[in-house]
Image 1 (spheres, rainbow, N blue to C red):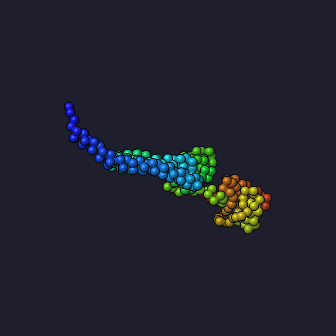
Image 2 (tube, rainbow, N blue to C red):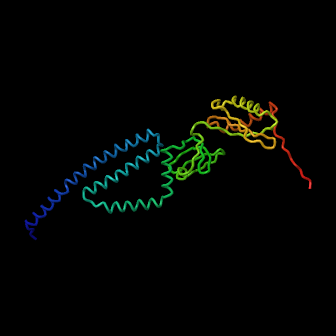
Length: 273
């Protein structure tokens, strides 16, 4: 079979026209790819430095760096493919549908992940803080991406999902470094209440963990049946909170015993049928 020279020339012209049309696109796409990868690397380094300055958790820094890098590379590849002439509409549609399906399937986990990110970024509490969240009270021993781990006073381990923690009320007893105790004792109204308050204050200030500034507060808050209830509010470091509360009861007992401060007499009314 003889190939006509005219057909060969047409094929050559067609190839040349394709090269003329696509060569600038390929070169441009290649340049964009190289520059884009360099920019992504620079942005990842800048993001890492920023996260280090904010003292973010190492695991969160690593994850966010990978997330930023992968996300930007996907955008870059789609852009380069569009420059070459590859249709990206269907690809983006499939990618979006897959992302929606994964998001719906992992809705709870994604909520906990987002909560963990918020906790690690904004730091409403840190490891070692005494907090109350979701009705649970304990010391934070670990902050994970999905969960926060607490250790209670009776050595129980509590695992709280970060989604619920970040969306709920958090009481951080250690945030300011100081805590005020609140212990109530009852004495007979026949005692000199001002003298009782003075003796208690002097005894409290001798305790090594109770601060002198601010001074302990002692106030009469209730009088019922010849009994006066005193509220004792000493200040101390958050780490010593439990010790102070326990010792204040012992201090009050010793003060009452030494100074013969009487307790209220319970009255019973017996009715004979």
